[in-house]
Length: 119
Image (spheres, rainbow, N blue to C red):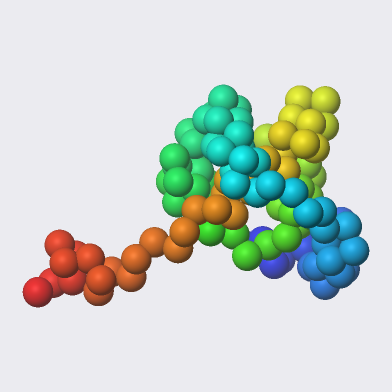
Protein backbone atom coordinates (compact mmCIF):
# COMPACT_ATOMS: atom_id res chain seq x y z
CA UNK A 1 0.00 0.00 0.00
CA UNK A 2 2.84 2.41 0.82
CA UNK A 3 4.56 1.63 -2.47
CA UNK A 4 1.29 2.34 -4.29
CA UNK A 5 1.10 5.72 -2.50
CA UNK A 6 4.51 6.74 -3.79
CA UNK A 7 3.91 5.51 -7.30
CA UNK A 8 0.66 7.48 -7.63
CA UNK A 9 1.29 10.17 -5.04
CA UNK A 10 3.37 13.27 -4.76
CA UNK A 11 6.78 11.85 -5.62
CA UNK A 12 8.17 8.50 -6.85
CA UNK A 13 9.85 6.41 -4.15
CA UNK A 14 13.18 6.38 -6.03
CA UNK A 15 13.29 10.17 -6.01
CA UNK A 16 12.50 10.23 -2.28
CA UNK A 17 15.33 7.77 -1.59
CA UNK A 18 17.77 9.86 -3.64
CA UNK A 19 16.72 13.02 -1.81
CA UNK A 20 17.30 11.34 1.53
CA UNK A 21 20.90 10.55 0.67
CA UNK A 22 21.47 14.23 -0.12
CA UNK A 23 19.56 15.65 2.85
CA UNK A 24 20.61 13.12 5.53
CA UNK A 25 21.87 14.70 8.74
CA UNK A 26 24.27 13.39 11.35
CA UNK A 27 22.79 13.58 14.84
CA UNK A 28 22.60 11.77 18.15
CA UNK A 29 19.97 9.23 17.19
CA UNK A 30 19.80 7.56 20.61
CA UNK A 31 18.82 10.82 22.34
CA UNK A 32 16.45 11.63 19.47
CA UNK A 33 14.90 8.16 19.72
CA UNK A 34 14.26 8.62 23.45
CA UNK A 35 12.64 11.99 22.83
CA UNK A 36 10.79 10.51 19.86
CA UNK A 37 9.25 7.83 22.05
CA UNK A 38 7.91 10.55 24.35
CA UNK A 39 6.53 12.45 21.33
CA UNK A 40 5.04 9.22 19.90
CA UNK A 41 3.18 8.80 23.19
CA UNK A 42 2.25 12.48 23.63
CA UNK A 43 0.87 12.73 20.08
CA UNK A 44 -1.04 9.48 20.65
CA UNK A 45 0.49 7.69 17.65
CA UNK A 46 0.29 4.52 19.74
CA UNK A 47 -3.50 4.51 19.64
CA UNK A 48 -3.47 3.31 16.04
CA UNK A 49 0.09 2.08 15.50
CA UNK A 50 0.61 0.30 18.85
CA UNK A 51 3.17 1.13 21.54
CA UNK A 52 5.97 -0.49 19.54
CA UNK A 53 4.75 0.56 16.11
CA UNK A 54 3.52 -3.01 15.59
CA UNK A 55 0.19 -1.94 14.12
CA UNK A 56 -3.34 -2.54 15.29
CA UNK A 57 -6.02 -0.14 14.08
CA UNK A 58 -3.45 1.14 11.56
CA UNK A 59 -0.49 -0.27 9.66
CA UNK A 60 2.72 -1.53 11.22
CA UNK A 61 5.32 1.24 11.09
CA UNK A 62 8.24 -0.36 12.90
CA UNK A 63 10.84 -1.24 12.14
CA UNK A 64 10.82 1.06 9.14
CA UNK A 65 12.96 0.61 6.06
CA UNK A 66 11.92 3.95 4.60
CA UNK A 67 14.07 7.08 4.86
CA UNK A 68 12.86 10.12 6.76
CA UNK A 69 11.66 11.93 3.63
CA UNK A 70 9.29 9.06 2.80
CA UNK A 71 8.09 8.83 6.42
CA UNK A 72 7.50 12.58 6.40
CA UNK A 73 5.48 12.41 3.18
CA UNK A 74 3.24 9.74 4.70
CA UNK A 75 2.64 11.83 7.81
CA UNK A 76 2.23 15.17 6.05
CA UNK A 77 0.35 14.18 2.88
CA UNK A 78 -1.82 11.16 3.43
CA UNK A 79 -5.37 10.01 3.15
CA UNK A 80 -4.63 6.91 5.23
CA UNK A 81 -4.63 8.82 8.52
CA UNK A 82 -5.10 12.41 9.67
CA UNK A 83 -2.29 14.47 8.15
CA UNK A 84 -0.06 16.32 10.60
CA UNK A 85 1.06 19.70 9.27
CA UNK A 86 4.34 21.29 10.42
CA UNK A 87 2.21 23.72 12.45
CA UNK A 88 0.87 20.82 14.51
CA UNK A 89 3.97 18.59 14.49
CA UNK A 90 7.18 20.49 13.67
CA UNK A 91 9.78 18.78 11.46
CA UNK A 92 12.22 18.45 14.37
CA UNK A 93 9.63 16.55 16.42
CA UNK A 94 8.64 14.40 13.45
CA UNK A 95 12.30 13.49 12.89
CA UNK A 96 12.57 12.40 16.53
CA UNK A 97 9.46 10.23 16.19
CA UNK A 98 11.04 8.73 13.06
CA UNK A 99 14.24 7.99 15.01
CA UNK A 100 12.18 6.22 17.68
CA UNK A 101 10.31 4.13 15.08
CA UNK A 102 13.62 3.35 13.37
CA UNK A 103 15.17 2.26 16.68
CA UNK A 104 12.54 -0.41 17.36
CA UNK A 105 14.08 -3.80 16.56
CA UNK A 106 12.52 -6.41 14.31
CA UNK A 107 10.37 -8.76 16.41
CA UNK A 108 11.52 -12.36 16.75
CA UNK A 109 10.27 -14.92 14.26
CA UNK A 110 7.30 -17.00 15.42
CA UNK A 111 9.44 -20.15 15.44
CA UNK A 112 11.82 -18.43 17.88
CA UNK A 113 9.05 -17.87 20.46
CA UNK A 114 8.55 -21.15 22.35
CA UNK A 115 4.95 -20.36 23.31
CA UNK A 116 4.01 -19.83 19.64
CA UNK A 117 6.29 -22.37 17.95
CA UNK A 118 3.75 -25.16 18.34
CA UNK A 119 6.23 -27.48 20.05
